[in-house]
Structure formats: C-alpha cells, structure tokens
Figure (tube, rainbow, N blue to C red):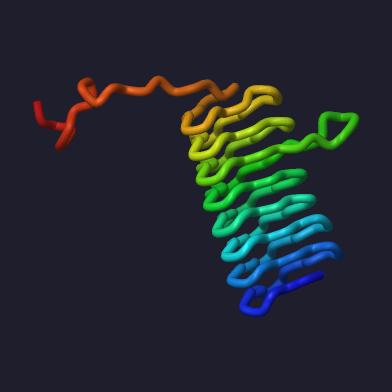
Length: 164
C-alpha cells in the first residue's frame, strides 16, 4: 500500500495490498479499498464505498454506499450514493470508463462494459445497460437509461414557476 503524505484515512477503513492513495485524499469511514485501487490527488471516498481495480482521477468523489469495480474514472467526477458498477457478466469481468466531469446520479447501475463520456450525466436510479454508452455532455435517465430530450432556451420559461 502506498499512502502519500497529506492523505487522511478515517476510522474503520480496510485497505488491501496493491492500493495507491495520493496526497489530499480523504478515505472513509468504513471504506474498503481492494487490490488495484488507485486514488488520484484530492479524491474523496466516503462511507461504505468499495473499490476494486478502480482508478479515480483527481478531485473525484464517491461519498456514500457505492461499488466501483474494474473502472477508470476521470477527474472531477461525482459518483452518487448507491451507485453500482455491475462488472461481472457471468463469465468474466468487464471494464467501465467514466469521463472527466461526469455526474453519476444516486442509485445508478452501470452494467459493464459501458462508457460515460466527459460531462455526461445519469439521472437518479438510471440503469445504463452494456453497450449503451452515454455520449459526452448527454443526460440519460430511466430503466433502461435513455437520453433526455433537450429543451430549447425559447421553450423554457424563465423566472418563477407560477408566473404566466
């Protein structure tokens, strides 16, 4: 295990062999970092988050109840509570990629292999099925996850909702 100076490891964290934690990281409490985990500078991994063969880029967050296995996660990514990367297809482990600045909504399930592009978003409870990548900047929601229709600025009312 490699832990850089300035990293904070909170109580009841389990760190296995082959884990690398960069400076300014905060881990725990109750996190489980399994072999092959690499946390970039400023990463925050919170309570009841488990990682395995996962690389989290600088300043990414996974703060509550998540499983991140066989994944490459870019910088500045927010992984919502209850997110699961379903990485085993019954025969072998599959890989997931999440691009820089992506926002993974609470309760999202990413069925590997899948790629979430930079600045892409998933709605809470979305199930992104294998082979249904989320393009850069796109927002998906639902089961199975589908792109949300973008509203034009002309159709979207400004100001208070009760104004007519």
